[in-house]
Length: 202
Image 1 (cartoon, rainbow, N blue to C red):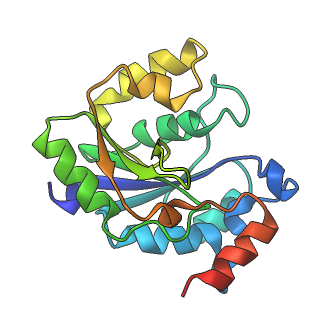
Image 2: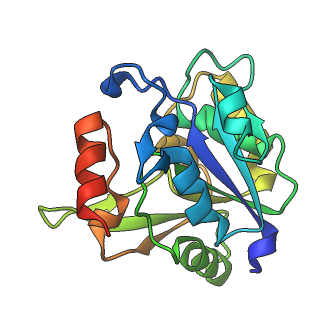
């Protein structure tokens, strides 16, 4: 699968409630907004880029890529699947990969490895699987490579009130790809965690 067959979508549409209601994607990380840092990291792995955001749209548009809010009809701040839907409605490549804005150290080979596994197993969806501190496997569903042909399925699921990513992905052919570095998928939920991540990563 060529990278130009894949559009990357940065998920920055949340409330940021655990950060005190601030717009998480616009918080500084190493001198640039967190979502822009994520966008630049993902841009090396895909052919096209988009952002899903629900406020401060002009600030996100300044990144130089299309910005799309959650679709109408799914509710306000309806969660990651609403962002998936916003991206799929406008994606012009056969595949789309989603990455949350609050995980600045995600692997640089994330998309290539997900794409290889999806092709090898004829899957419709590929997601990373890590091992947590207690030795248990942990799927990372917000890092999701999916066929854009799944749009109709997701429209139906969300309009029926579905909100859980894993309940929707379970309806389709999925492959889970092992990534040994669980810390690479650490997400900053608070401002303190963001500063800690900033200090720890080179």
